[in-house]
Length: 166
Image 1 (cartoon, rainbow, N blue to C red):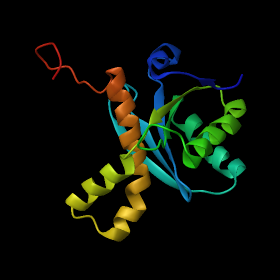
Image 2: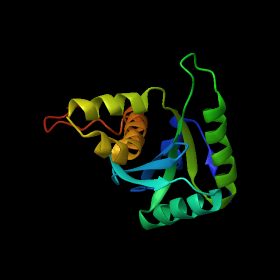
Image 3: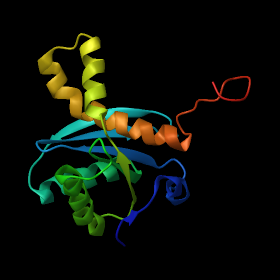
């Protein structure tokens, strides 16, 4: 069965209990990946894959989906600042179109405007060297994208010991 492209609010109803999510930042040269915990509270950078042919990229992604018992993908959609979609967004949509027949998971697009810039700024503030930033920026951007989706769904809110949200 092909993947189910859905809206963010539909995602929880399509996930099995304890199924993780993978966040994907599709760059021109690399694919940044992040993984949620089983409670879907925290997104952690996973790895950065060098971008190659679609077959190779999809095989690596599918292997990680199986390894980590993933129930859905959150794909960064690089919109323009005015909300329109340019060539990079079209490329992300094409990637998902090609991936859909190969995977039986829920897939959500998440607006990733300024995610890489925010991550770069954070890494610079943390005094991370340029070389190290280049190594980690894509997987950290994927975590930023995935965490945004988790927070939107309310998964990122940790209950306080006294009840309510912390």
